[in-house]
Length: 304
Image (cartoon, rainbow, N blue to C red; front, side):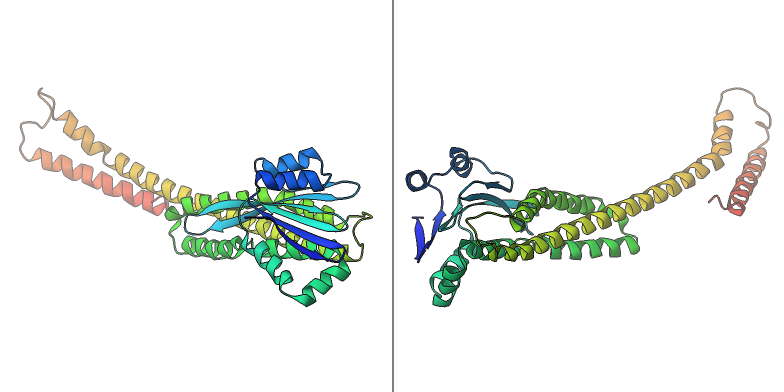
């Protein structure tokens, strides 16, 4: 996509999507950015960060998206240069939210008047507000899934929840790994004191900081809940496994006399009572009484 520019008195917004070689040449020719910043823009995915220079800011943002069908997290990258008289946004793929805010300002004289009077700090706030606010649909998904896990545990379906819980823990970990550096970036931005940005507009970033903190504590809360549910689920599975093993052990011990009897009289030698045809029924009756007595004692002691 070719470079787009929104020019107002003393302010210009350069909007670049799909960074090409000619875009890099445009940046090198018209701006004195640090070579490492341009290298970051042209390179691999970077963690969220903010670099502060004497006359401009360089901001890198990781923007997560959650695919509920494939259950995977994808990341879009946004690079922003901010100075007194210009703001430059760079994305390698088209971001719908960024595209919407660009054309919303471009098609609204009132919005253009606002940015002309409040400066690039206000434009930066509007951009961040748009691109960040629509990126955390995972919160609603987590709420639904955690409640479903709680319901399944209560209804005794805990065996089916192992992979569900593992998926939720993985998703929370992935989003937290993206949010942690982003949280530091926005917090730093809210506390900036630079000469080339109007300090009155910087108060807007406190709102973004509060939003990110709210998301962070929500993820922390869901992480704690799902860990607790996992421990409960594992305890229930362990309890039921132990109960099954106990029952199997009791049956094995109870049937041991019969096993001994059949093995003993299966030997090809003369044995007591072997010549009496009705003695076998006496022995089996005796063993059956012993088995029933064993079950009665175990039941009385509440072992089965």
